[in-house]
View (cartoon, helix red, strand yellow):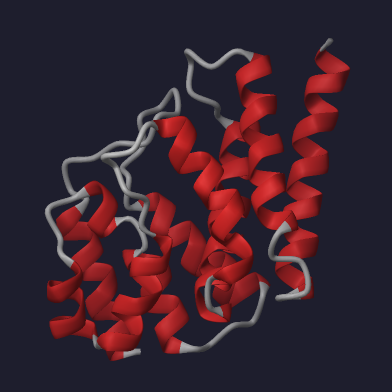
Amino acid sequence: MNEVTAALQFAARKHRQQRRKDAERTPYINHPIALLNILVNEAQISDAVVLIGALLHDTVEDTDTSLTEIAALFGEEVAAVVDQLTDDKSLPKATRKQLQVEHAATISDRAKLVKLADKIANVRDIAMSPPPDWSPTRQQEYCDWGKRVVDQMRGTHTILETLFDEAYTAATQDWAQAE
C-alpha cells in the first residue's frame, strides 16, 4: 500500500497542470484514480505492480517523466508495464491508435489489465461527459476503436472484459437512442 500511495502522489504531481478533455475539464489525475478504482474495487486486483502501473500509465507519454525515473522509484517491473502502455508521441495519432490495436495481444498480462481498465474508464467518460467538441460520430469511432483494442486482449480477465462490454453497450445504446 505504501508504494501505491507513493505512486498516486507521484502521478498527482506529474499531472498537476493537466486537465481531461471533458466539458468540466476535470483534473487529469481523476483518470489514473478511476483505473485504480476499477482494478481494485470492481475487478478485485491487488497486484501492486499492476496498480502502480495504472497510476503511472500516462506519465511517460504525457509528462516529463522517463522510464529510468519510474524504474528508479518504483522498480523495473513497473517500468516495464508503463513502457508497454506508452505510445510514441512522435508518430501520427492514427498510427499510434493502429499500433495499439496491433500490439494489444502481445503485451504482458499485467499491462493488459491496465489497458483494459484504461479502455473501460475512457469509454465510461466518453458516454458520461464527452469532450464538448466531439460529435456523436467521433464518440462512436473512439468507442469502436477501444473495442478493437480490447478484442485483442480477450481471455485476459473476464471481469474487466465484461465491464468494458457493459460500458461499450451503454455508450452505444445511448447514441442509438439519440439518433
